[in-house]
Length: 315
Length: 90
Image (cartoon, rainbow over all chains, first blue to last red; front, top):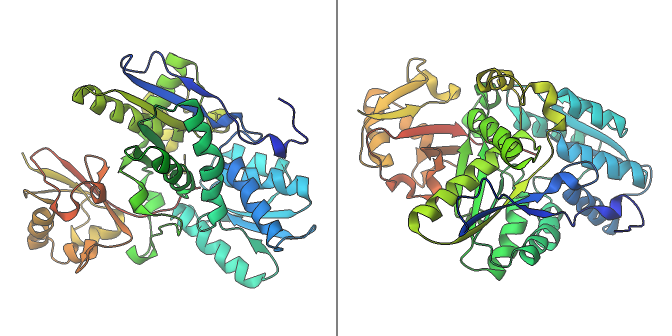
């Protein structure tokens, strides 16, 4: 495939079957390999759409500064696109994220403001909003509330999956900004009305939930509960176990959040087997495992790996 | 055997610092009332007059109750109920 530039090559990722982890010929799992995007994650889609939308609306001109709260992947994607288009990028990122995320952001020319570990991404959002108020000329794309984030998946990820898997019965993805689930979920439900849209939400260590007050919790503005049919909380033990199964059984080297998503997908598969119905379950491989090697996720015992993730924002 | 309830850091002032408490009830609503009889004030941090509070998520065996029966979600002995504040990703 030939493209005019790297940015133009975002999307059109493969959907691959899992012959070993699928329970039967009637209940099959399919992995959407989003690690094949230019910066190695699904966030490239949202980054391109959000920047294109801001340009179209006249919010961005060359030399402008983009500001974004991010736990990493969105920032990395924005950094790549911003560099190509001539914008500066300032990311607000929680300090309890992997070293590789910081290295990648800096490699693509972003500056990083670290937010406190306690509170996780909620704190990053809060700090970014405060910085935004001090720098009214900076453009905050705000992935949690930007319709272009969900639209990227409504117009690209969703249609790609349906074209490759017209018999789809379940779509399973991670819940962060909720953009993937809202966009793909809406598109797929329009085309396949009885489809199951399943969210896998990472459950972190206690530090990340260390809010001062329950009213400081955060639900992304994009989130619309009615798009989902089920939502599961998946802890690091299950996420790590599934991440390793995916590489051992199927050769797919994925990040840890993908393990959480696979866990929910396998749960849906088990329910279909128990009910005696056919299922074609597509799930998202959000990114590859490269950015998480330093966490120890892929080596040693699962207990050691889980201890290594304590207090980290691993998804 | 009872229902195991995992309490987030922010609500442990109501449980004497305990991370996990045991409770009983045939539904989530009954469980929360039963817990409140021993940990006064806990219930109203989780629900208001309209149901579950916006920034609180409750899971039964890791599934979000908002996609099950809400406060009327049926419980049985051996279930695990997890209460967590809503957090962002991305």
